[in-house]
Length: 262
Image (cartoon, rainbow, N blue to C red; front, side, top):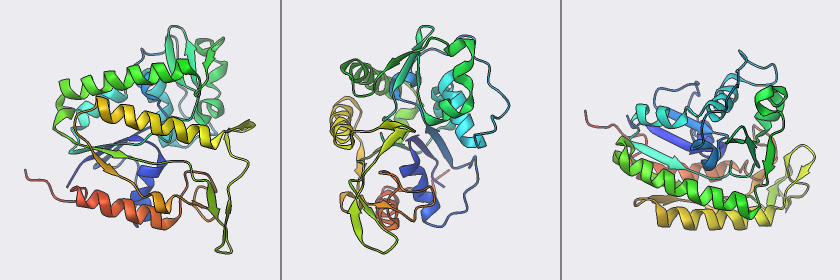
């Protein structure tokens, strides 16, 4: 079968869940790299960081993703996995970065919940706001590094796919009616400018397409509607079921789910 690596967020990972697959973690046919911004992906490991066995607030997979972001192990895992398909989506590129001890890490909810911010390795970390010009420059530089990395490693053999997504501006209520999506937060108490983040995603995707080797593109703009009944709760990137069905159909057309010749 195809072997799929995802560098992105739950919008891609949940395509498998919403098509009815039994989701085990980890899966032998899927490698999921999440909660890691491109600048963090290419930064050096955080000096002095010591992971706990499993913080009480986190499930195993989110904790593994967090530790990978801090220890910078994702790139080696991607190469070792030898995917037939490599999918990118940038919905997790909403978190601020933290500059600490000469490196960068992603300031995700998981990092907040883990308790790791109290470790000496992260004390005094300086924020790099996601919507700042400095963060955008760091991201564009890292996108260029990623393109060079893919060309120089076995990842060049994978089918590259950009899953183009945006934050939903409307939600599907339990009554079946649609309504504006309001009160969006990135972290608790941290309000988000939905339109500014969507504009940033547009710039990211355009720059990425110019830098990378040829990529296929999947998208379902007509189905980008937040779902109040979503398993993970209402969010601008927890879409209605039809969204995942449309994306799966496009991915299947690119050979995902098909058998690979030995």
